Length: 228
Image 1 (cartoon, rainbow, N blue to C red):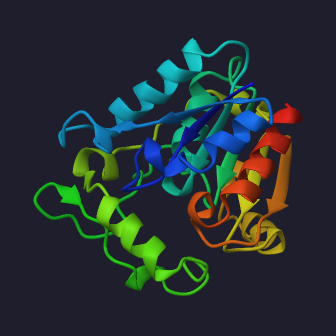
Image 2: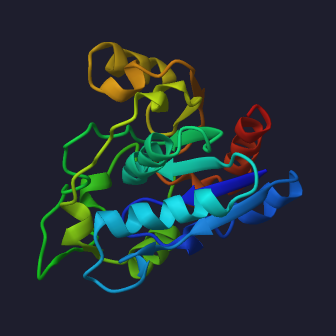
């Protein structure tokens, strides 16, 4: 089965390098995506450009692919389910929740000269990054690609309620499934509250399991795909 891999802010398709081989060993075809403005295209890229890239991958996949969105890209994966509810077989959300219609995509940190640079590890101290050693932190930070403001400030658009019929797996890295259930019940993830088939799975990692737990992460993704 095709598994489309969409990394979060500052990352390109190479973020999945250690996850791809074990996914192939499990019999799947992983497709890491490099998004416009995050390794492809120019810094003038917009959220719409990124959405088009994800949808093009969905459309070109045989069968019904699994779309994996990490962190902020959980919203991109969910937008794909909204735009192609009959084509997306399953959405896997890793360490994040999809934004609601009309909200800003990912304006989380200061923008400078038209881009949102990686802010350093200070904002991510604690459970987010506790499992990353200094070498991994340096590698991630040095490869980080500033996110264009047209992406960070882009507006999420959702229109087709059939998205709630698409099965969803929420991977819980730096938080637990119980915490996620509490947040959903409290109204903090309204899109997931309406999902008809939602499964929560745990992984003992920080926010970036593709770097810290690639083999275990691949096994989890393969299991999610096998259940599609």
